[in-house]
Length: 277
Image: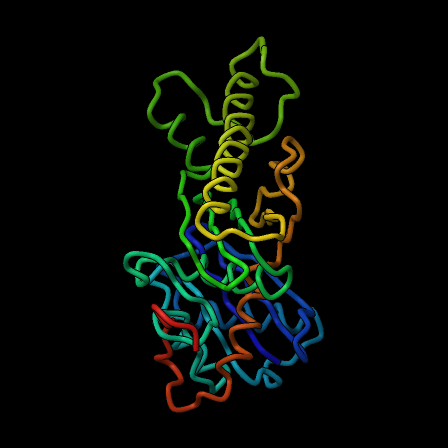
């Protein structure tokens, strides 16, 4: 079995793969000060509850956008699974040609999403990841990662509205059903949720035009959304073709398959930068 960690700013998503298929996944809050033993205890309980045995884990792969968690999870992999984890970072085999000015600046999650999207759906693609930040990535059918946009996520926007104003309360992130609202709570929900939908719709439409100019293709551009609020945003706009909540975890499985025999570099494998391997 393969144990995959997708570490985001708000949550850690963990998945277990057997023979290439995702058989179980869990989500927990990201804590910078948690020890490897604390994570290990939680994993032992989760595995036991699902009837899985930690001794069956053959390998571990980690993608993180929170550098402070990396050492902890590496230590967890060695202590509890006796494995040196594969780490997503500059130089690991992905098959992507990264066209960023500085490829090292591309977040690991964006690379993993691109690999998963292209492997599952082919290109050209626009991938929208609706998490702590909302990211937009454009990839061509030739497996070129062309770049994208980064915006504050819906929760960040909500927290900022609460923290930076004197009288506005913290609100639940849900659709009020209208934009002409008659109370403060619904007015905030309307502005936050429908404003985010409008942003996604506009950026996707503009990105499609630019993608057609940068990488012309006879195939239509498909839009794949992932992340915690993908379904809610998809319900209000027409530009999203596919919602795939497990996209990042499956991307880790695809990348693992490309790198599992590179034993000499285990623990320090890196993303290739300018050429596909």
